[in-house]
Image: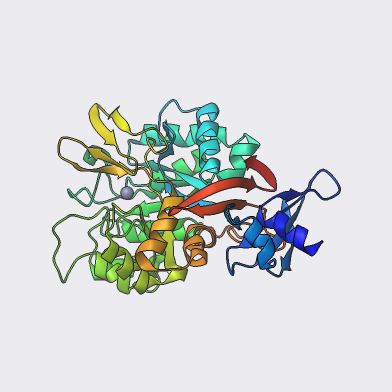
Length: 408
Ligand SMILES: [Zn+2]
């Protein structure tokens, strides 16, 4: 019986419990590779049972079947859009957001922060109003705990501002931010800001005092300014190594002080294009598994078939991994789901599967103070993915959000 049971969980099969709101799922536990079943009652993890590995005979008979892993769902705290849906679109509706959410479930993402970038006040307010309205749908709400405002209080300097439009970049404005926060229904959980902007330090202090996660990004801050930002309550650096000019001073640049500042965790775009192998290794070794977070920073083109598209009157080329301006052959944005970043992190840094998953699930949840998700333990919300590793890819078989199977 135990053999049969082990076989069933090897296959990642669902085992019904009694009652309609209960579910049991099995697979190899992401932390240690042992066989487990996770029992879910009313959307929450009730308990975890461990089993010894099945005998070789059983494994041998099913050798052609991939091993199914079970892990907490991925949490992407920086994503601009997905599957052709742009979260900053001024006409976005619940239908479009649900479409993107479903595609993200398919990609193993159970929580994400739609990221709204630099725009004028009216457009930002409209974006947050539309996103908030969409969150009145319980299915969307389950996967969108809040939003990330990246900008507009960032560096206007070329290179540091990245793809943000200079004309909308402005000084930190606490009154404006409070207005946006009100419009969002107090759902702006994270803001990316440049510490060297006039008024940034009191702005950071005010944000931190209201529980908003402050991340430093698209900036050319000095070591003093970065330290002052951390003193004021900044705890994160947004996509370290990107949102930075190509030519910087080898001694005095914004990257070293952020690496050296222990109070700052970092988010990294580990898509294999935004950072090279050595950058990823160095950043990861400096910050370690606990202070590294993987983000996709994906554009709306992510998840669409490769090809030429038009965005903001410019032609862009979507390759299977990244978006480029074809004429100049330079990066125009990211297009890999965060699951690809998990795999790249393992490939480039040699970290384990459990470490890579932590960086894309537990760490973002913890950074945002969302204690209900990001790990598999009794009492946590049942946000789970069942997946196999095939040819260097994470193949998602099932995704569960708050105990409900949303993709299989
Ligand atoms: Zn950015």
